[in-house]
Length: 344
Image (tube, rainbow, N blue to C red; front, top):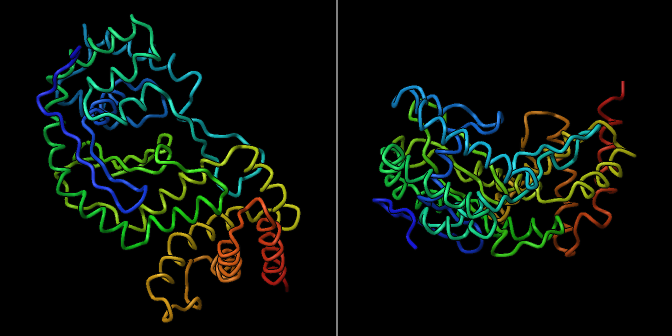
């Protein structure tokens, strides 16, 4: 049954040569707009809500009743799958403190072309009552949402530029090697994908991720490209690191801290720099590549990158991952560098 009909059902998808995709999905756009209008969690930015109330007035009456019911449903659906979780830890993790979770409700929209398709996907995970409410909710707000979604058709011209940017930094090759390096089993369903989504024109462009989806939030009429390939690649790498389990992060950090405590941030920065800048540059320049340049503004991190890079190459070429001796060897290199840095 066709529950909801949008004037424009648009799904623009441009794939790079492997698992990295840059897409526009109207279903995801509609979902994210209304999610941000509702402010169902205090962790959401208020940009879209402020824009909404400036354009349509303060939310009240039936709109408010529907928003409040949506908030209750979102909190209920998210209770067992927190996609906004930050893993609390007494020590700083080598691989960051962000966790991965996939909420069936939101993932149904992120993977669909239309709201109608998304509602069909989400039906097994919600009650009949909640399903009927969601259909009513989106149908009610459709006239207002369309004023924003129509602007999103301009995203089409941006996707080719993003594809070229990702290709330039060897994104597919990097992420394929990185998944093996981290010991992750990345499938076609868990591979990184970017979604461009509508954002108010007067607000600063931003990006964040939910599960394996990275959202590029900016106004579709603001320009043909907002982020360069290196920035997109760094976001993808952070997302891959977030796929590591809390136990993996904790155990690796404990091993590292035995020899080089207090340098987790430098390790994280060095690791990301190598995967985002150093390896792509070597693969591009080949024989002309030189490791002896400034890779990071921080002196310790810059030197650590030059020590860590050969070890990462050795680990990759040996088809090993971080579960082997990599963390221990990294901590030893860090400890030696720390001694030199603190010597008086």
